[in-house]
Image 1 (cartoon, one colour):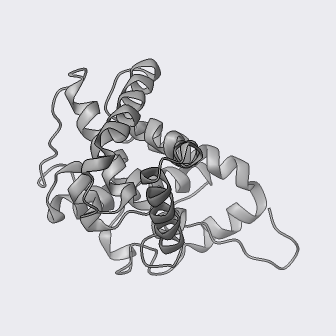
Image 2 (cartoon, one colour):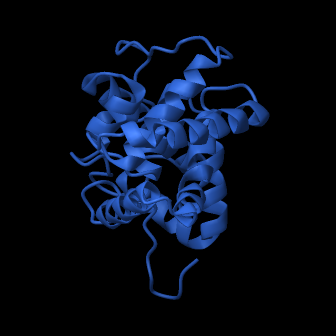
Length: 226
């Protein structure tokens, strides 16, 4: 995974993908603004570019709500149709990306293939003790055993496979929050808007989802906290 003398630190949380504060999201927002203007000017290539940018992410999120990939594909297709039909009414009170995901979630929920989900804040506690995390959600002190095992046994492809597998087995609402926050880089406020949940519930779901992924990775890498 790395050359001699190098240490690879594996993290779960904001390091999974750019969060809204690390500079990775702003260029995407600028590009979306450009695409939006082109769409309103009737540029068909802009719509193609928008689909290429977000279709895969939207499909992954839709799968959190519905029972099969075929249904998820239908939800995504319905979302793209709604985007085209509603473009003239989009008032830019949110980012284009947030608007897309909001439409997607509304379409997915309206299919009725899953019951409405609401995770109580008093649900089961996190899989990893909260004292082990810093304010940003990362490790307060990185577990050395984890780092050593990652150096010796894991490569990027295997780690990516583990993360995908871990996301797949999370409770649906935790997976939705993690996908939007740590994969798509939406802010806390945007996630609350898309999923129509409170800030407090969003924080709990995010923490529990990250905790369970960390637990999975520690287990697969051969050890937890010493």
